[in-house]
Amino acid sequence: MKIKFLGTSSDKPLPREGCNCRQCQSKDEKDKRLRSSILINKKILIDANPDILEQLRSNQIENLDTLIITHEHEDHVGGLKHILRVNRNIRLIRMKPGQHFKLLGADFFAFRIEHSKMVPTVGLVINDVAYIPDSSSLSLAEKYLQDVKIAILDGSMLGRSFGGHLSLNEIIATVKPYKNLKKIYFTHNGHTRKTHKEMVELVQKLGDKRFTLAYDGLEIEV
Image (tube, rainbow, N blue to C red; front, side, top):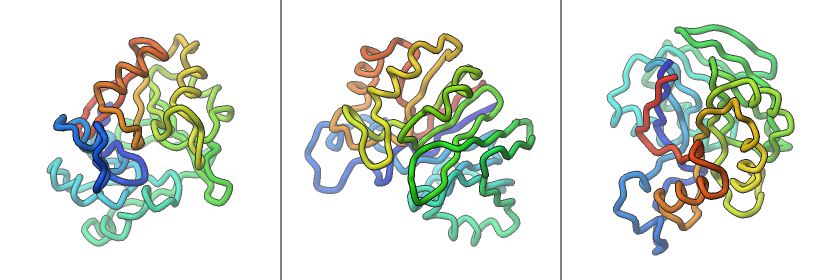
């Protein structure tokens, strides 16, 4: 199974307009982030953020088969109308907890994740990968995280939890003991004011070499 990170920022793109921090002034292409979406096996899109058409064009992606939605926050569905306009025959699936199906070589299972009191949210297990880009707690996800090889987790906050997002520090402390996890990627990465390189060094210091930050355009095969 191939996973491509089309975007890896949180609710707003990076760099932030008018900001002079190291992260926003960085010349490293990995510090230029659009909002979070991933592509599975070149045909299945997870979430339609407001930047999605730009992401599809820059990656030369056409003829999507399926769009899967994890929850209805603007940074996950703000591009839905654009997708439906240019892909009229796309299959649209709003995942619900307990939903399980196989599609185009991938096995999908959805489970409830704590994120927003107002907007129901799911995490996904896709083959041997757990995808949880938004979380205020991992208590409902721990049994799934202990049964996969790769985790893609919420990188929104550094230092402390805030606004429906568990901090990187707390996430690392939770999953570090899970020896089944061979690689842990952070997506939905926030305005930490640290560069990509600095953040990779930090998460590996807090955790170990399994931890890293995803970046726009990263493709992994699992």
